[in-house]
Length: 400
Image (cartoon, rainbow, N blue to C red; front, side, top):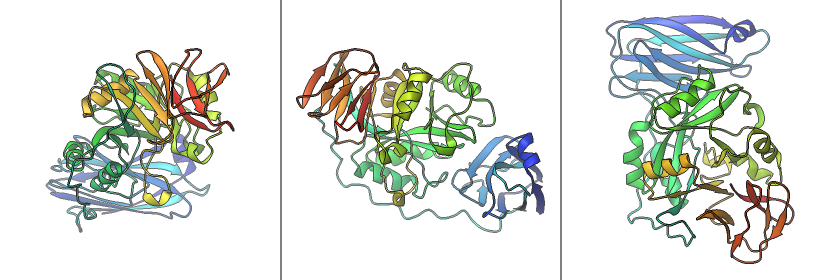
């Protein structure tokens, strides 16, 4: 069937999402194709069945297929329930005159699920990540990245390719945080084990007024609800929510919240281009300095020019497994740096320690400054959070 719909700014003013219903009876596969003038508009694409949410690809795809056994990246495979289904369109950007959207819905599908790229070969030997870092008793500092994407949303790499990339970067863990979908969750543990890296379950809950990462195996978070509900759901199911890139371009955080989540992506890959920019530091001070800092590379594709682990989030955990690393992040045993090899500012048994930071400047929240004179130096507690800078004020590492 073909459905034509003129989408206007009046539609967008009524709400950011438009549902297009259609009937399914006895079908074993479904294909949806969206066509519109992409030069003048950006329309996101998703799907909901009678049994619940079936997937989201945002503006990254204009076609998806769902069958009982397989589905396009970002969508959940499974039997097609009889009843009313909905194509969900996100009105991200529309021209003043509106845009015509054409939906072709095929029952059964006319084509198959897009093939994934050939997976890279796993390393023949276990990758040793021995780092001589001071840590509290029973804990080890593990290096990772709390924000990355694959073909399950708008990334260019498959999950296997991303895992191989993270392992090659000498990361211990990598959070896979796809936009508004959890279709990747089932593959994380096996893929991570094959490539020698812990892949953490995450969902980037994505709206035009801001993004947040929901961490843990907490199920799908409905991005169409108010973020107060995101915070509640994450906590109720044992996970946690973190505000993403709160001052980044057109996806800065704009939502008012009844209760703020305990975490925020203080260092984001956009910082790499201007590390002396203290805007995020001003936001952190205004938002609340008790927020646990995380770092996110927001990796999408190799050609963007920054790899996973830039910046790096460090987690002081009992081991490098999923449960232990998520617990360390949740409990706030974190530090953030520009990468895995640069200066670090760690908290060890309550004491701040600068590692590999000789010649940098230690800065407290109230502006006190001290030059670090050695490669391993204990620093006095003052007013935090704290940062390490170069003499010309480029921020290198942060800690609470």
